[in-house]
Image (cartoon, rainbow, N blue to C red; front, side, top):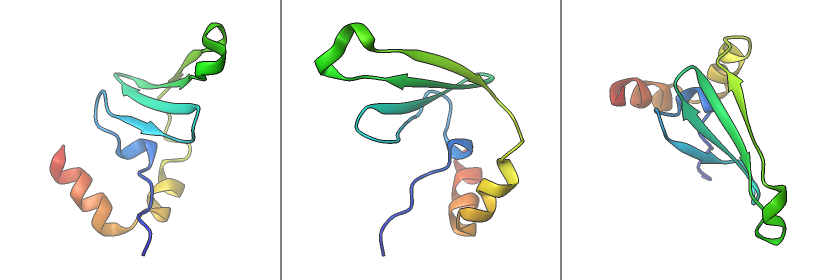
Length: 76
């Protein structure tokens, strides 16, 4: 069975999640930083802070397997 990606809500502080070849999310205090990086266009790399919101939390947790949630909670 293919491994499911972590939810951004499961990331630990300073943990990074690659969403695709050029986009990653970094967990920081109070939210996340979405970063683009394309080695072909170094001048065009960008980052934006997205504040924490519970708006999609329940929807995300319903998508994630219960054993993944329990493991993430144990890890702190």
